[in-house]
Amino acid sequence: MDAYTGYIYSAVWLIIAVYLFFTAIKHSRFFFFLSGFFLYLSGWYLLDEILTDVDMFSGVYNLIFRGVAVVVLIVCTVVYVRYKRDIAERDGENTHK
Image (cartoon, rainbow, N blue to C red; front, side, top):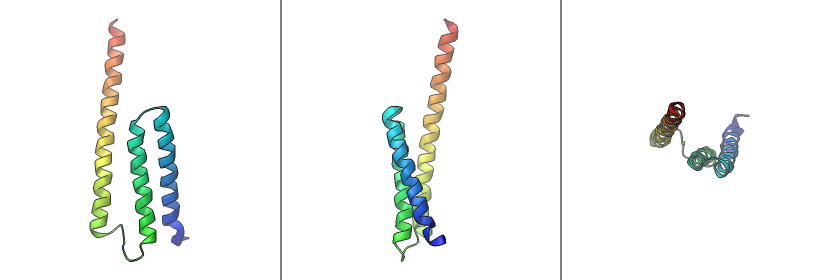
């Protein structure tokens, strides 16, 4: 079963990426960004399985993987805080009327 785990992860990340892509069409364009990140995850896990000579989760490759994940986490945090602040401002405007 361990031989197929990377392929399963790759498929799961791809399914999530497609779902977020269609969610972005209906709700918010920010989900396009998240869809791209999950597409990146899918490709990374697939490369780890396909490239037998290179371990994509060690050394410099691991630093690249974690760096991209940290940047996405920071962007998501900033967007979330702005979203919550905008909601709080809208609620504040509604109570003053």
